[in-house]
Amino acid sequence: MNAQLHDVSASSWLGAPIDARSLFAPEHAALMTTLRGLAPADWGREAVPGWNVRDLAAHLLGDFYGRLARDRDGHRDGPSFVPGETLEAFIHRINQEWVDACRRVSPAVLTDTLDLVGGQVARFFETTTPNAPSLGVSWAGIDPAPMWLDTARDLTEFWTHRQQIRHATGQDTDPGPRLLSVVMDTFMRALPHTLREVTAPAGTQIQVRIDGPAGGSWTATATGTRWSLAEPGNGHPAAVVGLDTETAWRLCTRGIQPNTALVHARIDGNRQLAEAACQIVSIIY
Image (cartoon, rainbow, N blue to C red):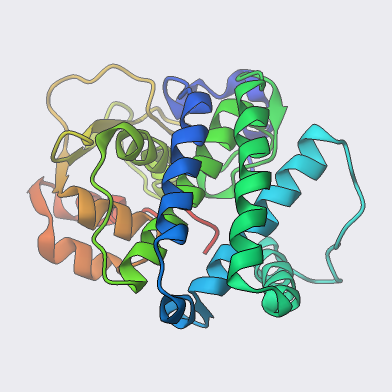
């Protein structure tokens, strides 16, 4: 990996920083409204493969505790890698161990604890320094990552899990643009890393356009050493991919596969480049 990927000060290729710090409080309030509105039977409904709603809520609690313990309190004890274990395998293993342990916790206790600890998480993020080095973001190809990206990444995870709970209980995706626009902007920071194996002449551009009030456009430019979101657009991208918001966020979180997204996409220009952009994934997968 290029050494610059480990230098937070050299992360301009990720595009303009995102300030998600003020959004954790409204996201947490929305989560609590969702959980407190569930019927008893809803907690047992499948939210993601292998986990029901209660499991997913327990996973969120583990994320809350982990963030506070590690970054607020400087606590360094906890699970470690086993020999030969990949990052993806490690994350999936410790998440499952936590969820298994929490199956003795009732939905009512889980909800009250999430309310208490989630408020502390929101207050913690409000105090963070955006350009400080923080946890790596593997799907963006940077370790350590600037705190602004690590922070925005956590917002996307909390938002995504809330949508999965909503969908499991018969509700649609929350369309509120205040949160969704930041979620989509964060997801698109995976685009340069997604294209890392795509060879193209310097100056070649691929643009992703997402419809609606929470959408926007993101242009990745080949620079000769990597793809970058920081280069000015020339108005003539070699490929343009148009997606609706629902397709875009589901693609980035692998709620749907790239082939499904391509069925719904509007593609102009070089199809091969467009298909490469649609391999984007903005979670540890």
